[in-house]
Length: 191
Image (cartoon, rainbow, N blue to C red; front, side, top):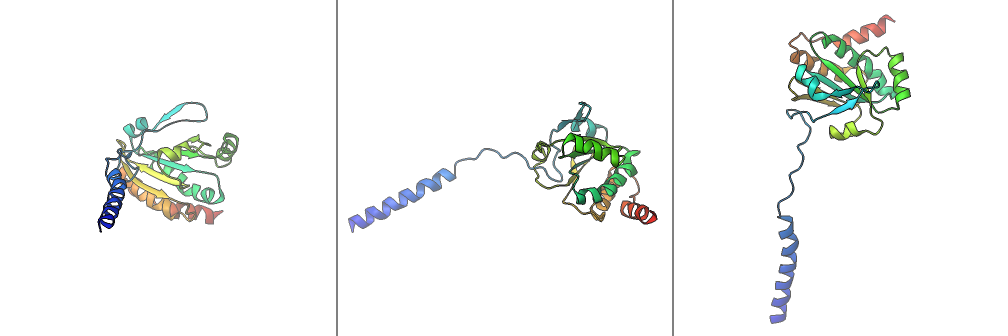
């Protein structure tokens, strides 16, 4: 009986030790990037080598950050997001596109698409780490002052996601929402 009691006591002590270690305070986790959170500090160079500083951009007005590539889905979706950018640019919205493709490929893509927006190239994908996402594309709408207002992830080539982003952007710049889906679809049908 004594041996049995000693064995049970030994098991109890051994099972307590791992549990006691797991109660130790953990290091504080970094705050997650999410709606309602402050946008992370983010700097990247444009193709000319000029530093783009997200904090400086959001001090002036809202910013749409689009982490993307040139795949066929993102390419189909691009026209809708270009329409969002063009629709609210005059009201203060700045759009920053970060491509994960090589510089030469992006340079040709920008030329072919008549891209007239702020953009950068990040082939290493560090921008995705900063924004704590693995999704592509991801659209992060940040209000003046740096608060994240909306995040839309994944490719949706029919323009529905861009339309939702357009509606949120309109509120940030105090403008009437533009039907970017109808605008782009109308342009496609006219061709």
